[in-house]
Each structure stands twice: as structure tokens, then as C-alpha cells.
Image (cartoon, one colour):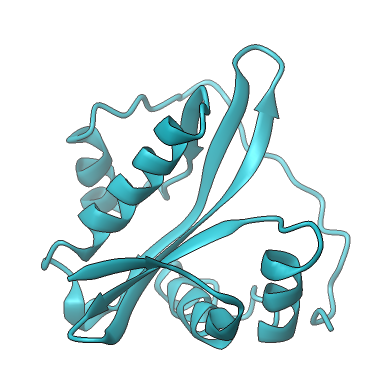
Length: 153
């Protein structure tokens, strides 16, 4: 297993994995992002995220994508938006390696913490994060307002 930084040429692969994750999370029609927008947002003049690809024998099997947030209480925060390993490759250490790559990036770049969300029914992921000593916050409710409803160009 090998972890490498994603490059602009990986935008279609990232999109494919994002769609696979959306299907797993029971939201197959929620993805409006496109490979073109991913390439522009990740490798344009002001990159909005960092990403890594897990490969086994040169074949991509998963990815992690993080972006930067700022906490008025804690300072810079690395937010893990998505971590996905293709179903056929789960249990081989790719998720662990991707997650630890994100943690290492956060430590090396002076982020005060790393944050993420996990669906309450995804017990396997919850147990995975508990093994790292993750804190689970039952008090805060997630909120959002969608501004775009059509596919990005």
C-alpha cells in the first residue's frame, strides 16, 4: 500500500470515489461536483483542499480530501471532508494510512486540530475513529444551506 498526494490529473478519480462514497452514504444523487470543478478548486490559483490517493500495486483504492477551517477558539483546523476506500479493498490498511497521512499533515502544518463528521449508523467508522481517541460531540447540530443545486461547471 502506498499513499501519494493527489494531482490535478486525479480529479476524475477523486470524483469517481466521491460518487462511490455518496452511494455508500445513501445519497447517490447529492453529488453536483464535477471533475472539472474539482481540478479547478484543488489546483487553481487558490487551492481549496488537499487530497491523497491510496494505491495498491499502482491501482487507486481510496482517497482522503481535507480543507482548511479557522476556529476562533482554537486557530487553524484541518477538516477531513471525505475518506473512502473502495469496498473490495477495505480491511487492508488503506483507510488507516490515509487517516494517519491527514493527521501527519495537520501536525506538520501547525493545525490546532483535525475535525470530521461520521454518520451515526456507520459503526465501523465510529469504532475506527475511537481507536484514535477521537472525541464525539453530541451537543452540536450540523446546519447548512445549499446555494447551488445544478451541477458545477
